Picture 1 (cartoon, helix red, strand yellow):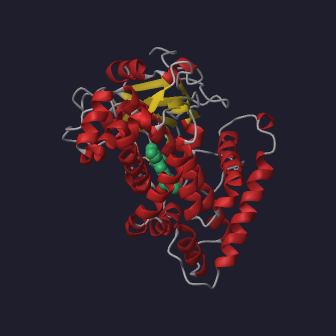
Picture 2 (tube, rainbow, N blue to C red; picture 1 turned 180 degrees about the vertical axis):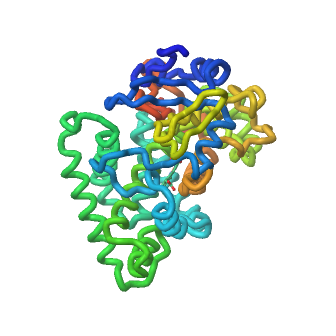
Picture 3 (tube, rainbow, N blue to C red; picture 1 turned 90 degrees about the vertical axis):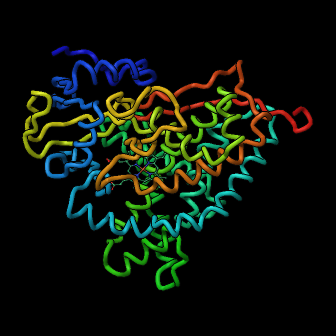
Amino acid sequence: MPTALIDLACPEYRLRPWDIYRRLRDDHPVYLMPDYTPDGEDVYVLSRYDDVGLALKDKARFSSQIQRDNYMNLPMLVNRDAPEHTRLRHSTNKAFNARLVRQLSGWVRGLVDELLADLYRHESVEFVDAYSTALPLRVVGGMLGVPLDRKADLRRWSQAVMNSFAVSAGLDPDTVPGFFEDVVEFSNYMEELAHERRGKPNRGDILGELVEEHENGALTRDELVTMAWSFIAAGHETTMNLLGGGIEMLLRTPELAAELRADPALTTAFIEEYLRVYSPTQWLLRRTLTEVTLHDTVIPAGALVHVVLGAANRDPRQFTDPDEIDLDRPNVNRHFAFGAGAHFCPGAALSRLLAETTFRAFYPVLDRFALDPQRPARLRTQQGSYGFAQMWLRVSPPEDR
Ligand code: HEM
């Protein structure tokens, strides 16, 4: 078995992994990276659609409890198994129910219009900062009851939460000074907000549902705060990658933009196809609970498994012409961009709402925006995530149209 097909630390692999994904799927469906982690653990890579689906859905054989020690091992949904996961997930499902998300559409449209109006005030604007980071943070922050005048704090706190995950995954804490203090500040602030709500009627937002769950005894105070953290962390960066990437593709592909503008109902398919081809979360980790044999390779019990959603989503065994955006694809909803099984993303409906509202609002005004050729869009090099770090746009006034 080869030893160096993937180097997760290599920026080139993070930016353009598609060719390596093909080689993994075709030639090494179970690829071993020996002694790969800082602790010298082996890592097994799964890349085919069926195998990725198995790792996501088979809870008897694949665990989400990755960490073995307790350092920064927070009780988050994403790193827990049943029965703890089932209990926490029940509270989350209440907070993200479909009724709640549907009710948000008018409010989200208002925020989108405000941000668009801000973009028009510039001749040149950095879209990731001005729009694709701002919208999800305002929406998730608003649903958690954080007032808009704390938006600068919210940004700082959400960065600190992201840094805390990076530290728990092995980043040297000295490279992100102050993150711990910011996380404590955010936790205290969320506790205050929750405290103010206690005993008052539920406004029907996420915080209201979480406080109700706390009052019923279903969630502890710490879990309530950790839950708020995880929504900020899981919700903003992923959605930001979808919004920025979608707009970049519309600006770069005028035929696609014209097709969508002529028939905005195709937006739903566009969002699913974008998510499939450029999955904002490229990979996840699991740990085997038992020995698992796949394609004649034995993965021992307790092994780390690198589950490559981005490779599964381009597997020709599942999707015809997998690298193409196809708005008529019959199995357009079969991708794993939001995961699958018990941990399927609870924020999927919310991020689809933000993307749908954004793209539909941009169609009529798209020709006021252009990618700046002097400052080409730059992809992030962060492990496991795919999306734009920076995207400068030129903005023209309405009379130039
Ligand atoms: C395009 C946007 C998004 C993408 C691509 C995405 C992707 C994912 C994926 C792949 C998982 C599964 C993780 C696993 O199985 O280990 C997940 C879980 C999760 N997502 Fe999202 N997500 C998005 C938006 C959001 C939003 C807006 C929120 C909340 C505000 C959110 C909150 C969560 C939470 C709390 C989990 C953990 C669920 C669990 O473990 O049961 N996500 N997401």
